[in-house]
Length: 490
Image 1 (tube, one colour):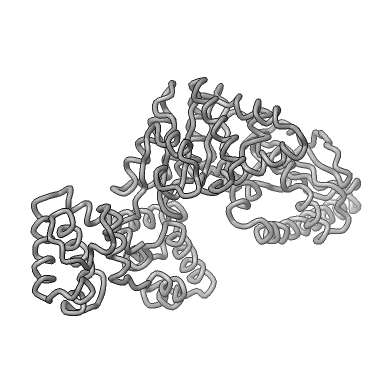
Image 2 (image 1 turned 180 degrees about the vertical axis):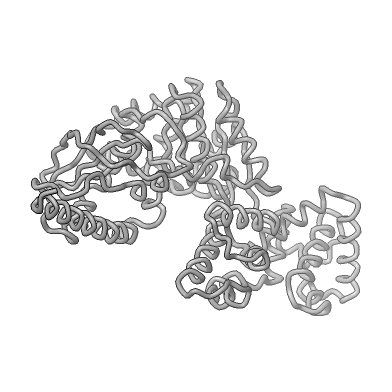
């Protein structure tokens, strides 16, 4: 080979290495700019689609699907170009190609230049590595214009397969799957409710993916109640409410997340009420999530609460130890975290009871610690790394909290916890509160008795024994007590 050719080849190799190094730094900046969730869903699959930077200043990149290409081009391209220019000032544009895994044909690409115009190009690309493609990304049709305009992206990690089921969420998952698989409208609406980080949004995304796979002809729109409000305000501002109404009334499946965010927003509630009715009249599916049941949503009009309770209302309870441990084991296995011993997983499941997000975050932190510091993970090291999180989860339950929660659960007055009334409708909940006070606080029996209207410690002992007996013979009652305990500990 001529010397000139060898020199050119060597230069190209050096340039390719430099570009790879720049791309790794760009990836790190992108993760910081947009956060882990957006990065993992939309930016992590990006790979370089050329060995060197073109003379025209174009940097070529590739993603596995047209949908991902369009989403990245529409939402991240400008920031992507800015970060590339910080690493390499000669970059003029970022051109995004579609490159299915294993494909060999030149991909089509779209880019947005500094001036904002869309450019379509064809450029040979290196194959997309398998590890760069989100393995859980369901294969679905591309979104149409209405879906693209209205819907937020669905997280490819949130599918029914990745949802860990336990006693606390089995009804909600079964209802969600029934709605997703049914060719007709089964429950309308399906209302999912529960505390923060218990899996409501996961189920919403899973429904969306499943319907798009199983019924590709259906138009599916998923968005938060907050985004619905902003879309409505924008329509009012630009005097385009008719187009807004037509768009939302044209969908087959409407999913609204966190409905509590429109509490007190009368105009938005009015519009959602009419949209809800219009879709129901057309036999279109509606799925809603919230932090409370429809009847307990404050700041929501009575007629709207009534509509939300029309169909099936499914509660997601706080997780128990077994479910938390299953979630940790599944996540550790999926992410290849073989360096986390079983006793550490059990420690996390026992100590972090607030929500699943914090639980998974704790696992990520101790895994990162082991990787960065190079020390084995033990219960002691986990305690050191997670000091702040463990302190937050060691919240002390007070007797007053127990009394209030039990009174709400059994629909009696808080004052009845201290009153001398002995009617069974009052006495049994009071005994339950005494039992839970003994289980969840460090107070002595005399101290507990004083908190219940100055009762004697023998009254508290009798209440504890009575509740333990009832738990043994009545499974439904035992489940009721466990539910109250989980709510107080969460």
